[in-house]
Length: 151
Image 1 (cartoon, rainbow, N blue to C red):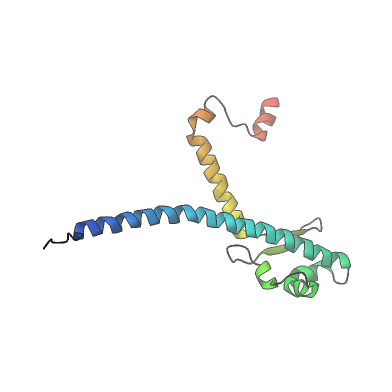
Image 2 (image 1 turned 30 degrees about the horizontal axis):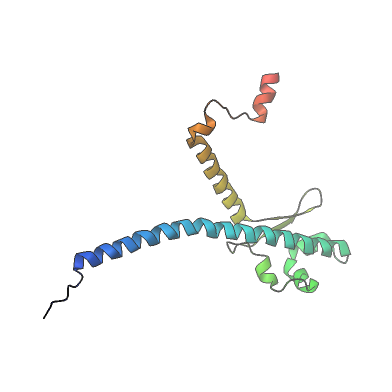
């Protein structure tokens, strides 16, 4: 009778270790995709929320300040949103900041989207600085530098 060769403990440990490394790489890459999806959702929520609240302001039934203070009430009243409580939150589940700027225009911002854009900007800046083939012989010129050079 032939003996069947079984996997050794070392072979099993190596396979589990490789699976762990592959899972770690995939999850690290997925994180960036998830943040991109959250940013996309937030941008579209801001756009939709802006349109609906501006329509409510244009009706003239209530002052803009009242609409900004109680956006959920006016979203429900409009009947245009299936889930108003979800619309007033960004992709990171933070509440959107709804204000009226000094020009009287509606302004909606997100702390999560602002942080994501800052992170993306820093990453892009870091890539440009590290790629010597693209930046060799060039210099970043700021608008203030041009003003200083011209007098």
